[in-house]
Image 1 (cartoon, rainbow, N blue to C red):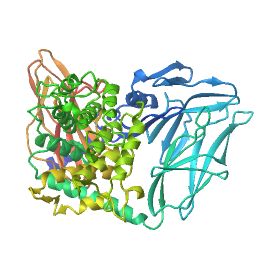
Image 2 (tube, rainbow, N blue to C red):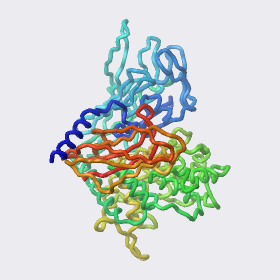
Image 3 (cartoon, helix red, strand yellow):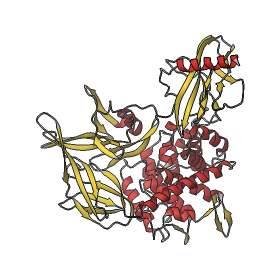
Image 4 (cartoon, rainbow, N blue to C red):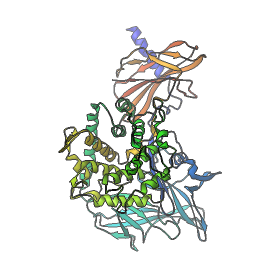
Amino acid sequence: MKKRLLSLLLIFAMVLSFTPVFDFNVYADSDIHTVRVRVEGKDKTLFDKEVTVTDEVYGIDILKKAVGEENIEGTDGEYGFLIEGIFGEKGENKEGYSTSWGLYVGKDGELESSPVGISTLALKGVDELLLHIKAVDASWNDLTCIPKLEVAEDGNKLTVKKIVVKYDENWKPIKSEEKVEGATLEIEGKKYTTDKNGEVEISLEPGKHIVKVSKKGKNYPELIRRSFEIKVGKEISESETDEQKIEKEVECLRDYYLNDKKFSFEEAMGYNYTSKNIEKDLDLIQSKFKVRENLSSATDYAANIIGLIASGINPTNFKGQNYVKELVKLQKENGIFEVKNEGMYPTTTAWSIIALDMANADYDVEKSVKALLNQQKSNGSFGTINSIDNTAMCIMALGNHKNISGVEESIDKAVKYIKSQQTDNAAFKVSGSENPYTTAAVIQGLIAVGEDPLSQYWIKNGKTMFDFLLSYKKGNHFEVKSEYGTDIDFITQKVFVALADLYKGKSMYQRISIDDTKFYEEADYDFELIRKETSSFKKGREAQLNVKVKNSTNVDKKVTYIVALYKLNGNNKELYTYTFMTKTINAGATEEFAGGFLIPNSGEFEVKGMLWDNFDNKTPLAKEIKVDVE
């Protein structure tokens, strides 16, 4: 008993004395979030994409990651980096006004001019980073203003105001609001213009609506291009209930896939995208996803790239094969991708673009996008026949490339075509019959280009596409019966990825990329951590992680062994406490290390054992050990 008490006292002393004094974010994922990066030129959108923040700290870091450093022109000065051009577009000096790149920050749904330069703008808490061509007059008063949208209680009148910023003689900013005449409001594809009172009289049905607000001047934008989500009427609670239903269906399908022996690339993506504990789920996905070995088409290479990234495995080096390089080699002079004549199908090029974008590959993007645009028909559909499926998949690929000339116009035509094909049940037909596969594809395509499939625009007779898909649910999966038999696997897969996108509100193919993935097969360590026990740890009890450390090098090496306790909260991890031990291991020798602490009685935890060179460099020397806490 005395030994037990002494042991606990020593552990308490160890825990209290080793208060963390260094940056542990190398291993903690709690600060990782996404930022919408938007670049708005004089006349059109040049870039609009959600970008995951990993080790980026300032605005300039995430902008370079998003658009590519080669697409940014500027100079370093006394006040940091001054942006002069993005994608070749620059400001200009004219009589009475001048234009330049303005920097704006979105936080909690509010947009404001950044109080600091992009070099010192911290990303913490930032939801949107906006670079927008703006104009000022000779006194530096803003001529391009942030819009504000006011909605009457019944939703029948919308008022646009602008936030005007002027400066007094002491350069103190003076803000005011003015109503905007001649502003353009785009709602569900229809455009309206505000009157002299800044108002538009309109009858909106109950539900959610996306309102895009803009105003073009003769030589510069008079309003920052901005979208607002508004809610009208009493059916709001029902749409919110839909979102809750979608979450329940996603969780149900995740449970269903626990018993699936093999994942397709889409199932791997869906499981990754809906994960609340990605490190744990990556082990599961890796065990179930299998690459395609018969590489007879470009889509086989694309499927392998997407599936491997979703599994946390590097597609540029998987069992000696570089699927990314091999797919890039399949691009032809006219921009399409093919192994043998399958490039005639637009979806082959579409999936190739999606996969290579996820892999941040070096390929001829503009040629491939132009090739895809060339396969669009005058009615907005893609392919040799009118195909809603093809059209949905193609806009899913184009959604990342609105900065390329002709893409936004192509997407608009495609969305109008899709809308024209919608049935009274909010579904879509193939060969005369309403088709759940096609409807699921449409959901993913629309989300990829910024449409909300649950908005009033896409509701027919009070029904949504989600309602239509639910009609095929059987137990914990989905079924389609036809003259050819009963399909469970393919329709469940298609519904799963569609609901995953609905659940997140963003396209999984734009949110998961090679930059966001931790690759577990890349490292080739010279040291090995070998745990002496196999059991998990218990809450409220002492945790002692004893290991052997083997030095496989031919030199003596001083190493630091760390045992860390993390508190889990969904995807987030917070370092709770840790202990460490430092010693030198002779070349070729094996040494024993130990470390531990008392685990609290309540909460979710995980224990990690790690081997670093030292606390300054934090360079991992061996594959870490993870132990569950029950």
